[in-house]
Length: 160
Ligand code: MG
Image (cartoon, rainbow, N blue to C red; front, side, top):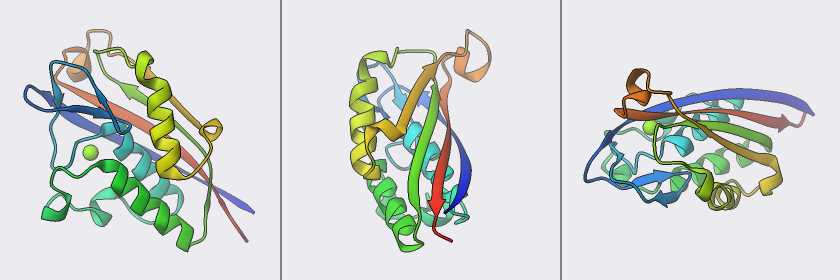
C-alpha cells in the first residue's frame, strides 16, 4: 500500500443571523459562519485535505459555490460525496487530523459529537480522527472575531 497525505485550509467570516456549524454540529453562539453552503469551515478543510491526498483537485472544483444545488447545503453531504470519490479510486482513509481556530465559543463540549458526525460521514472509526481547537489570542482576523479558520491533514492508503 502506498501512503498519500493532503492538507486542507478554509476560513469563513463570522456574522450575526447565521448558524454556527462546525464538523456537522450546530454550536450555540451569537454568530455563525457566512458562506454559500452551511459554511462548515472544519468539514471544508477536511474535504480539501482528502482531495489533496487523492490528487483530485479542490473543493471548489467539485462543489462550486456558483451551483444552486449547494446553497445552504449540509457540508456533511459534500463530505460523503468526497468519500464516494475516494472509494472509486480506491483509497482508504487511514487518519484525519484537524484544528479549528476560532476565538469563541469553546468547542471542547462539542468535540465528541463532532467526532461522531465526522466518523459517520467519513465511514471510518472515530479512533482514526482527531479534532483540536485553538484561539487567535486576540490577534488578526480570528482573534478579532471577524472569522474562523480550520486546517486539516488527511492520510490515505492507496493500493499499489
Ligand atoms: Mg469553505
